[in-house]
Length: 273
Image (cartoon, rainbow, N blue to C red; front, side, top):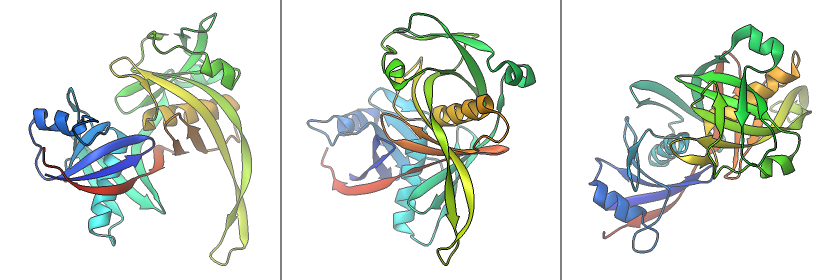
């Protein structure tokens, strides 16, 4: 069986052009000793599908980017793709070495009252002595509750072996620290500075009740950037770099939320399994 191995934002995947093999074959390929080893198995066509050793899952952003990276390697002149994921169209565009995904509109789940208060929920996080106020971000069909912590040390002290609890309930939970904002120069084709842009950075960890701690995810990165922008108020950056344990994701916030990360195919494998 022809496989391609790649990585995006700390997530490894085996890509297979064509129809999906049996789940038994997929699990064997993902096994790190006698198989090839990876986090995900992805079949690549206009409807990418993703699998773990336990079965099929909704394709995460890393799987979508790697599918685009594989298709770009087959046809280098092509730089944009429309995939159908969970019945919805997802637009992917290659920019430099990054693959940018348009995740559609985002909003504050609690509306203007949440913006004014700066929070609309509470997070109970193991490892911290007291609950923390959180802001809920709505992205597609999911709600992400985000709490700001005082320092990287406090963030590192959160114990995600114990399920966090959000009130009201949320699909995903994120704990973050705001690392800061800075002005960066924008250059034209001749290399001259033509303006400046404000960019922020956040460090975060996230949790999904079904999958446990998440070491990279576009939804978490977007929610963290949106929360930071809301807390900092008018004039805050619209572009944020989210720093995960698995890698960095760049977020651009307008009416739609865009998230970009690198994706690289680094091996072609003929697997005899």
